[in-house]
Image (tube, rainbow, N blue to C red):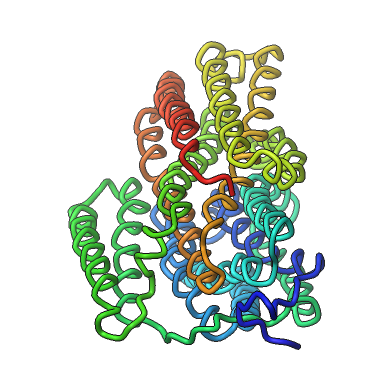
Length: 477
């Protein structure tokens, strides 16, 4: 099969089947980040896990995923994107099988770290392949489909997790990856052209170590701190993160003078207006997204006392609205550009405001301390969730395309890796920051839960409407 080297004259277009196969990467990676949430109580009973160990099951995956994403993108540019996708997907299947069959808690945690590492190898190759093998409207549609796949996996993760755990047990949430992954592994050789960057620049070992260290020093204390009561080492780690981040920036600027192509060229982030203006918007957007999914799960299970299955079903309005809207996003972005993003953010902000208002005003009627449920407020919450789902679909589907619109094809892997790294880091930061505030306020009483929803929900509403204003500075794609 022809190898594409990012020269516009030699691009072998990616077929529709190839697009679908490559979407298996972000879908499986996003699914495994969220699907585990509803299974944690069952895993705790089955393996005798402590609260801190449960945090590691989630954080181990997320941290490994974020730490290795940029490296995964660079390796794809260097050695071939299809090759790295196959390696990452095969490793992800093996790690999922290990997680599903894990006899002990340490084995499960190790499998989750391996899953995250494998996801970091395969996921950047999807965006990079779209950037290098497609052009014009076809590229825009594929990138929008990428955003939709990741968003659908996030939204459906808790729903699917609740169904699988209640019917087949917690191991099924990992084993379900195996047949899906094997099918994609068989099809990729026949449907995806091999591609790599025309510039062979090698791997920046020092930059890789510094970036990985910085992300680990940031994410480990933020994900583990709330469960452990913020011991001294968490604050020391955050200080060291600042030092590592500065060293990484200094090295990235100096590397070119030493004949080394840096892992993350600052010219890519600072030179492309779409990246420079878009990454902060993307970071806050996914910070709010992660916090919303986390708080929703806690309110449904701990606040309203729903089972894992019922809590998963409660998110259905968001999932259905997201799913239906996501198919319309590519066409809308082609016609209206960044106005799709702004509209999505306004709708999401309005939906969040409506949901918060109903929860605060009619908490007892939704299933709090009152013995009966009033369906009027329930319907209002469902309508608000539908609006949130539509807004999220418009936002995710357009944001990825807008941010990558000015990234050159030769840097497609690095650009995709940076984008997804920011996305995953923002998800973790959103949970750590706003999630910690919510759990602190909600501890011990239904009144605290209502206060937590009001405070954290209010912050999410303000941030979302603020992003709608900032989104006006983005290019039209």
